[in-house]
Every structure is written in structure tokens, then in C-alpha cells.
Image (cartoon, rainbow, N blue to C red; front, side, top):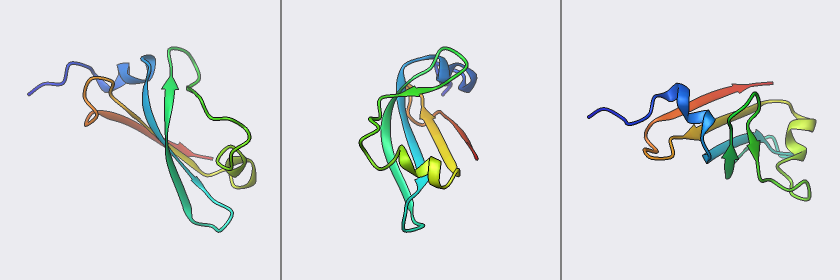
Length: 81
């Protein structure tokens, strides 16, 4: 069964994403965010009062998986520093 969307199109649509960072105890912290693409950057609705936005400034390792809006089994993943 073919997916209605190609992986290249996923970051251009509002979708849910999973963001993984390294916590202060050196363990992984993964959480869902609402993501809005459509440009050069992926924006999320995280507030700066929470711990997760502080993690990348302390340890730059991060991974993001954006799930397809109509099929969550189709996704785009990226990671880096």
C-alpha cells in the first residue's frame, strides 16, 4: 500500500514530532512536540521554562523524528549537534 505522502513533503506540513535530547543525568529525554515546517526551520511549541530547551545548550546532541500527518509510519529523522 502506497503512502499518500512522500517523506520529503512531511517537514512542510504541520505534524507531530519526537524530540530526543540528552538530559542532565546523561540519559535520553524524548518527548512529543507539535511541529510546524514549511520553511528552512522546524518550529515547535516548547516553552523555555521547561527542561528540554536547556538540554541542547548544555549538550548539543539532538535527534528529531517528524511523523507523517496522515500516516505516522512514514517519518523523517535527523540528528546531530
